Image (cartoon, rainbow, N blue to C red; front, side, top):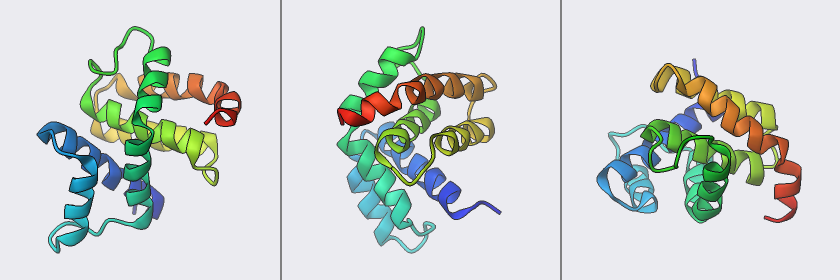
Length: 140
């Protein structure tokens, strides 16, 4: 049984992934998902993750580009890119989530949803950003 926050991260991932694949605005997809009966409900936390990633995407992608050694953000597998964006948002802007939890959750979702190399890749990138998170938080 997935915990509520884990489910919320998976739901946020679904919305970010779907919107990118279709070239749609993630906030529009979020609104549409909240209004449909057939989709699982979108929790408050999932909505906050989508809204936060959208609000801070330029800064998040800049950090990913700086810390994803050998990868551009555009070349990352789409699931990894979305999970990294959620992870960085949680690391820097969601104070009630401890850094190790944000990293572990992203890595675990990558383990079940992405490539064999993804868990190690996400762990490395998010770990490097977490190492400097205290300084980054002061400039957010």
